[in-house]
Length: 392
Ligand SMILES: [Cu+2]
Image (tube, rainbow, N blue to C red):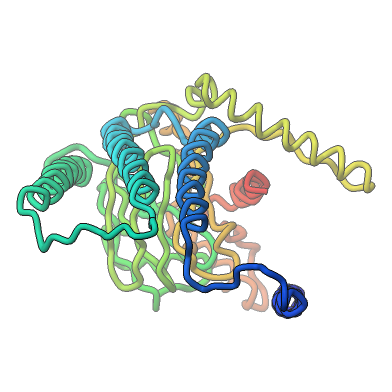
């Protein structure tokens, strides 16, 4: 509502200014001012120099942007393929930057050099084969190179060898949270269907499927360093996108189908926290948070907690009102830490049967107390919620 009012005020203001200029113009009647609609040499000169002014603005703003925001680009990828991905991106950036610097200069120089002059006629020629050949072949070669290099990198990143030793993990997207499912000892995920969602079985796992018997679900994603993880992605409701920026990975989660992405993490969470660039980033974030905290305290509110780095899985498709906060904490552990973390998690099948038993005990008139149903890894929810602070 406020934005609508602001828009109405802005529109009315522009109309008022426009009307005032018209009145101002009318008051000039009778003066010797040139009111001709045809541009004269003086007008053309002004336009020509303005072209140069705009060129200078483009260059200065580009250089300013590089210094001011250049550090925001993530460095030091945490996955094995990340370096290839970054190379492709930086080479593409460099080519685009180089070409645009030259073409902008040429474009604006020509606009200045050949600006309108009285009694001067433009040279007309129908075509020039040599010129057309040059400006066709150069982009063709550059683009073909970039596309082939991109395809080569994409195929390398996306290729998963059937016989390769990978760990299969499912990521389940829903408005507005993530769940992870570990495939257990058999490394095969049990079948799942949205119609089977009931109670603690929040991912709709087919509890009768033999492959589902050892499946474990969590609301925090732990992965071991140095092991290739094959992520199988599903969505419960609408289109989501699993985005893990530090690992240079993103894949859509499409309702009704399973998509996949595999990568090998090469840096544990602790190692990434020790990374020089990351230390600097965290310090900057904490400086901003300290400033914000001072404001909050002045208003009698609680200060913000200092930020510590954590890998994140984010949703990168605008999927609804709370899309901005759809995230899950990722922890990259050493293999032994990962095993000890996973060891005490109960399977989805066990959690579902515990829940059933608890319900039966509740309904029975006289029964011995049954163990309370435990949602797998429910303690982690609090931690994940805590990470939502990070984005603010
Ligand atoms: Cu989403």
